Image (cartoon, rainbow over all chains, first blue to last red; front, side):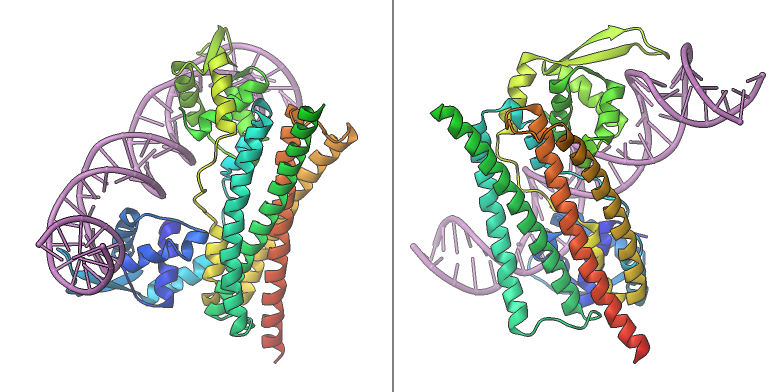
Length: 189
Length: 189
DNA sequence: CGTAACTATGTCGGCGTTGACATAGTGCGG
DNA sequence: CCGCACTATGTCAACGCCGACATAGTTACG
């Protein structure tokens, strides 16, 4: 019925009304943890959702040359989003630039690869830290226990992020340490 | 210097010469585990790599209306690929349709979501099984221990796949079991 | 004998996505 | 008072990518 980005936007509108600008902000955080889009794309997507009858808007005077538009989810949009959420997802097309680099790492200087891996480890540590803070905030208000609540849905996606970041870090550290041990024994021998 | 797909193709040519058709086959397996492309894309990419001096080809008569072209890596291609492999990757733009569904799962019938998760679990189990067979084949010939060998590079990417599939399965099972427990107590109560 | 699968390369339209450009009011700090 | 950041929406060109279409010889199975 619409694109994947369309469903991401509908998911925001299902929680509360948003302006296009607010949608763009949410597409950086927290949707950005599993889907991203620029504001250029979002404005076009919102227009198409309205055209398809899945969203509607009311106009308010805003700053700048354009009126502010507050978008809401229509009943049809809600039905369609619920249907989509439980439909089987297509097999994802993997796109992992990191693995492609490791696949070709045997051609490069091991020390340079180790430096690159150190950078990646730092990046993932940051991300994991952010996720763990969010989790602490959840747990402070009581761990979500009703699987039909919005709060539980947010929590479940957060746990996925924490799990995958941890696993990514585990593998990156193993690889870095293995490469470092090899280049050290090279330098020493 | 070229697109990410270009580096994926160069990575294959660094191992041995390939025809365009063979590149397309390798882009399904094993490169398909972390990067995918259709043959339409591959032919265009190969032309650009030749134009940029990173690859070269010799023509052989082949079946069908076109000559067969065997592509090889040039010295410039090898240098460029080695440079790229150790350069810091850009932060990936996350695209996880599964998480987007879970984010909106609170709108749907829990039993339908559980059925969808069961399908995903089966798919990931298959993938993990494939990876573990590949790993067994590696270990039968001795676990790769030279981090500068092509074999070690292949092995490292395989371990990443096994780790991430295991983690994905762990999370999917937790979510399914939690949702199932909730809808069971609903039906019973 | 037909036909399906495999080898082998190529074009084309359409869509999703990105980055740059464009416009303009409000509020804040130097 | 100047400039920057934020709110707010919009267009446009370019590119990556996908599915469909096109051509044609060999091999193998029923």
